[in-house]
Length: 126
Image (cartoon, rainbow, N blue to C red):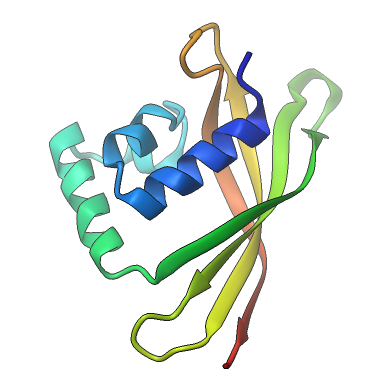
């Protein structure tokens, strides 16, 4: 059984490795990126462009797992820290995000990413 933290790790790995199909497949139909007026091929191209400009992915730590929201709409949430190395400028940076998920009946993708809020961001020069 897939967990929300496993979904976070798999999506982080997909971003690091450029696996755009996995990013798309693990995004809920109510996510803001899904709701943009574009087809899958265009979304994939947009992700590929974004990832070409990305810093080097160096780690992802799960900080907490739980539920949030009104009792009838409790959504699974994961707070995590993503860490990166600046390719051009040098140094490292990170951000903490609180991501929410939608539970599905799909045995391949039990939890789909619904959205997230960046809580903190920090840069550490080397």
